[in-house]
Amino acid sequence: MKPILFLFIVILSISCKSSREAKTKKQHVKEMKTKKKAELGDINQASDNINILNASIEGNTINLEVSYSGGCQPHEFNLVGSAMISKSMPPIRSVVLVHKANNDMCKKQIIETLRFDIRDFAYNQNEREIFLSIKGVENRLLYRFKP
Image (cartoon, rainbow, N blue to C red; front, side, top):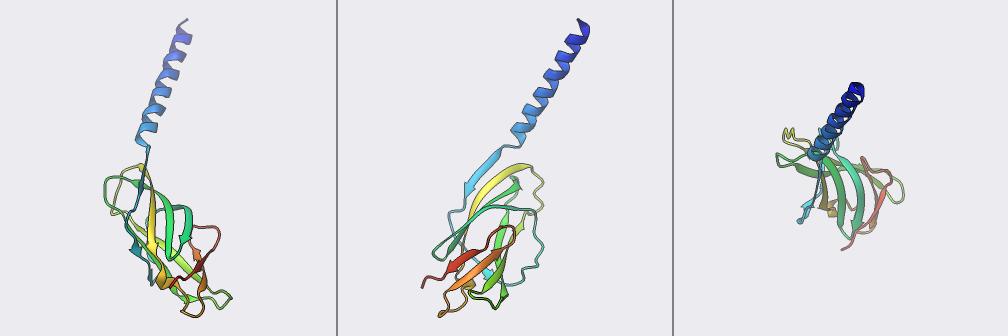
């Protein structure tokens, strides 16, 4: 009888612990209401961990659904494209999302939709199409500049 009671107490304490852990790792979902301007620059900048869950282009705006841990400090995001492009048709521009967590040590899982104006990523006024090869996104996205 005692071994069964002991086993029951151990199983109960383990299940309670995992329940507490699940509460501390809840996800927080938010959407960035304003658009930031994407920029051309150094795509080799240091960046804190971030996962891009989904990427889509609507007109001259890119929407990036991202996931990162934090919750105690404000996070900063910049979308940076390489000034150099490949000589293919349409051309390809490498792009990276730079994440600055500001030493946020909290563990809450944040899911956020970021919006960026990507007009600076257009090839030129005559050739309106360019592929964006975004680090962390499996497929290239075709961007058609809208005047």
